[in-house]
Length: 278
Image 1: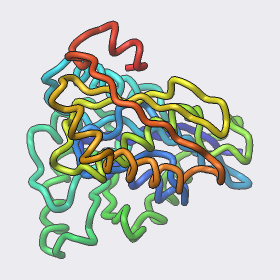
Image 2: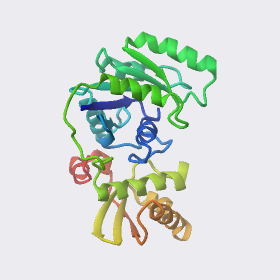
Image 3: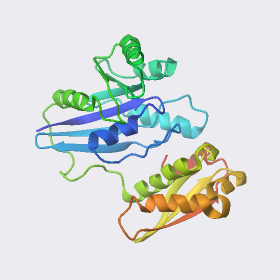
């Protein structure tokens, strides 16, 4: 048996969570085009007869403006050490900037650079990005599309090859170690980002406060009274749409209750962050 841990790091919105979901063949990490969608370390497990890969999806590393931002960066950088492989994901359609280089400088010399979004980049863009990525002095470079799956099998074959002999860390049928309550809260946040789009404040958080199956109560936190109406929507339209979308991703019979609460400046208060698990 071969086994090992693979950390996926990179700037916000480069497609780390989409890549993880593609590798596993199912959704274990929420996705959005909003920055900092992933706020916690999410583990996804790929088990085959002779190998088990444990992938660690991380928050996008960015220049923090709040205490929450600082803690997200700490979460991401703390997962780089002590793993068998580090995948640094960069965007094929965006310039290779100081942020990418800052993350690369914290990766080991045998890190793998994954140039993602080749499906929406021109061949010239992909070539140029691979050339620029070579400046990062990584061990391998893989152009992929997490959205379509192009190139992902080649990347995966390389990762399997790099794994040492080791134990099986998780049971065969386990695809993630994310608790159910955390997952439902994340689904609510994902769908809020999708339904409300640009109007939605970045400063929202979600948590399950009651779980008596099939009834699940989820609290949505905003920082100011003015944000509450945006999250609720006209005559509750946003919450209704979010509730419907979340139920579609849960077992039949689930009943979701959504409540909005103002928790002033929660992103900047240590106790509020700890209560939310950040």
